Amino acid sequence: MADSAPVYLQLGAVIFVLGLGARLAGRTGLSPVPLYLIVGLVVGALEIDALNGDFVELAAGLGVILLLFLIGLEYTAEELTTNLRRFRRAGVLDAALNFTPGLLFGLALGWEPEAAILLGGATWDSSSGIIAKALTDLNRRAMPETRAVMSVLVIEDLAMAGFLPLVGTLLVGGGVLATVGSLAAAAAAAAAALVGAVRFGEALGRVVEHHSEEAVLLSALGLVLMVAGIAEELQVSAAVGAFLVGVALSGDVAQRTQQLLSPIRDFNASLFFLFFALEVDTGELAGVVVPALALAVVTATTKAVTGWRAAALAGVPAEGRARAAVSLIPRGEMSIVLAGLGAAAGIEPQLAPLAAGYVLILAIAGPVLMRYPGVLTWFARRRTISPA
Image 1 (cartoon, rainbow, N blue to C red):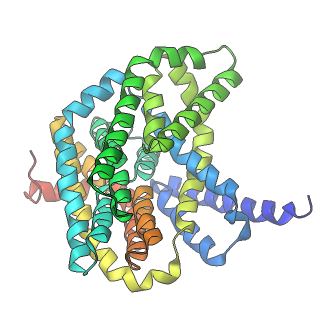
Image 2 (cartoon, rainbow, N blue to C red; image 1 turned 60 degrees about the horizontal axis):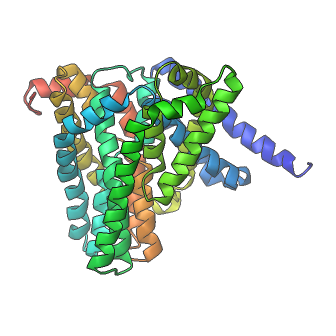
Image 3 (tube, rainbow, N blue to C red; image 1 turned 135 degrees about the vertical axis):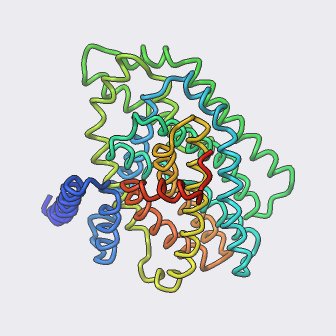
């Protein structure tokens, strides 16, 4: 037990600092996510041993899973399927506008096509974890444009279920049959997850429901983790699996589950953003600041157009469209995963640091912009972005 004392002290000190960041964010009306990330960068530079263990990594992963699960509780299965059909055009526009800049940027830097494709995926996929957290912090989960934002995020994550095995096959030099097989397996897994959420929601509700809050808490948490694990095994995002479990549950059990899991979500989510920043090698960032900033500016603009159009499809007025536009700007965990695949394959040494710098810029700037979306409305009224 004596050896555990430094770990408790270091971990406790870091968590206490996160609490101070949350207090500061509350006073300024901002999301605490940027402050958590900054703390992570500082702590990473200090190389604190207590944060290098498996516990912090597991708790961080649980944070993003619970974020998406609790967001899913606010939807019904019918609403989800309706929204996915309604916003499919926004999903196509999202892919076209946000994959292309990363792809072209990588090719312009003289990278191999595989590395450029990975960078395109990194610029395409927004961070479900950061966005869900910021929407919660800013009390915007009930806003009319939020359904459009969440629908685009779900479409992105489902698309990533096909994109990941595709690039994996490309990196190992797989043939056409291997590529088609990977895509078919991913598509079948995503479809099965959607059908399961729609058809078996009532059965899941009966499994979780109980008069004891302890039983409800443990049943819901265990169910979410099992589905998230199955989703990961099937090459579907664990966050998507958790979101769909939340969609499947409804009624009184959904409300009780939300109340019980919210404190656990907040604690683990803070560790997720801390751990996210800890993974960034600050020593490699200096050489990629300029290209990362340029790419961030371009793709923040293209994401803003995506969010604006998605909210327009929902008939949301200009103020809501502006909120949707800035809500999709943050990039995060999936962008780092894609860069990691390239680094593991050894195809482009600059891919990982460039992606890390790019993600860090937008992960910090995105939640701040979400607090002040009015400037985008100002530009829209001057026809910078068409209002329809």
